Image (spheres, rainbow, N blue to C red):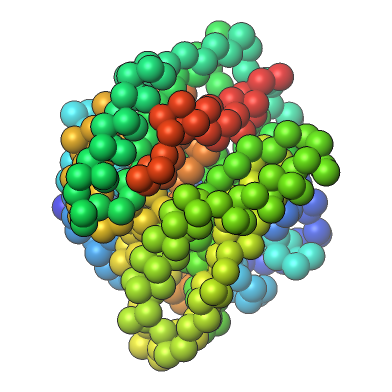
Length: 426
């Protein structure tokens, strides 16, 4: 159910500005940052012009209708006309359909239109200002802001379950897969807690992630910050793209050895099986929206600073009446890469075995424009800042199939946590 008043009538203006090579440097201190950045391009925002908070199985529909109504009534002047300019909303959604509003009244899913958005696309920079005022807002004068301070004395510890306890859960999942002929894969996650000496300025980890993981999408929405390598859906000018990741191996730092490891990953029957599950699931869910699709027969190896993944990019031509990127993201979620196969059996096992709700971990995160185009990733390699701003809760997950080894999966989960842990260091 929606947990906000009806959408207000907004007025939005986008103007081109001098090229900005560091979008994060524009976010004022004290503001709650909003980001979607990759390779120096993307969007950052702050302030709130309108917000919808929602929960439950209808959360994507609620958000989509709310933003459609808002966009239809808005007065928009877009002088730039590139992806991300004009009226845009950023969102982050709960993994689980059954997730309800928190006791505080806050919802676990939201869509928000920032008061200010600074963007960059293909060497062109722009600023969008939005308000409920009846007049067009004046052009926003951007300037670099004081740099954030690094978090102090960060300590990371197990969350709701110990490493040994989680290995027991993995072993149980492997056993269930072996005895349940219909269950092929389940993705299990665990949480960690990072405690700093004082409040964490999220601009610090955002900047570190955007620099160190520039091939990932660095996101921050309502205190959920991370760098995801997995693009759930991009809808742009009639085309759709989705990147599937499943199958992982750790990098060593030795380039020659890493090439050998990449080759072994590409031949690994366990990892290829896991990847095949994920790709087939994604293609099946995306097909109803497309008139044509390209699904590569074999994956490629994606090289990241700390890991290598088997990856497949599925592309398609959208039907003329295709829904918005937000609606497509809702239809695709959850993919086999973050849930398992078959979907409902995997979801039931996740609910049974995981020690703590995922909240927005592994849910869609990204942005949608008034024309329906946008980009949505899967909230991975991330942490949620808590009410105590010195504490962040990390979630990491691993795909479990019949051949999974609990100790190896624990080691993989630790490696997957390193990007956000390192980003919190000075």
